[in-house]
Image (cartoon, rainbow, N blue to C red; front, side):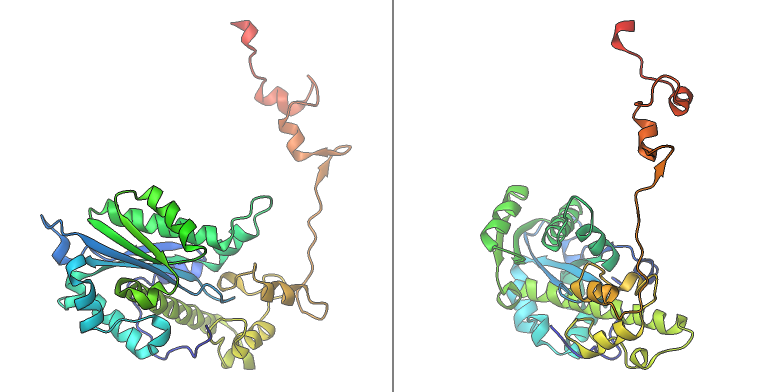
Length: 324
């Protein structure tokens, strides 16, 4: 979804600038809320949603939020009016997130939340890995499972889980039910509009992604020696359909490194710009390196060159079972 980036976005504690700028994925967990600490083993409901699935720039963020089952609708829907983050204004989202992070508020006392920032570099590395495709759906599934496991590991008594689907709901739900057999799991389309805990998770994900883009762009502008017109206009929402984003990509391509850690190079938008005949990128070919009369480097470790092979002589041969 294309949207004008918010101004003065709230920088939540889920933002780790050094990790972001290094291109690494990372997770953040808020403290277990006050109402769930000590001997309180209250049954909890947990919701999961994401933000930034389609953009060519910036991370994809998965988020979850949990709270006592008894407060699910009364606190999130009736009191604070959480809804799908896409129908809330940037300011409303930011205000809700700030309340979640402010000590002594009812949201902070009752709700715990967590995020996984999936970096563009790691997303692309999985999707472009030779031989074994690790597509975005698989990455999203693994991220969701890991985040939920981490909440259970903190001793939270999660009895119900609601998730916005990333594929066929029945298949996704069946897999999660096998992994978490004692928990009631519902996977549904538009879950962020149906279940308040998923709505709240969508706000955590969206605010974190917006803040991540802001931090990355600020670092880019501070490090740039001279800004192009496209850079002055910003990179917009990061979606390929956003004119500001496409103009920024066209006007700020490094001939060797492209756009750095902020870009998903596995996206067709980036590939097309890099491979375009009239583009500014340098084409690099990586031929197989051969050594000594057609020998590959890896052949030195296979033991196929005979008894006098120098490397085999250095490292030795396996001892046969017949010696024992």
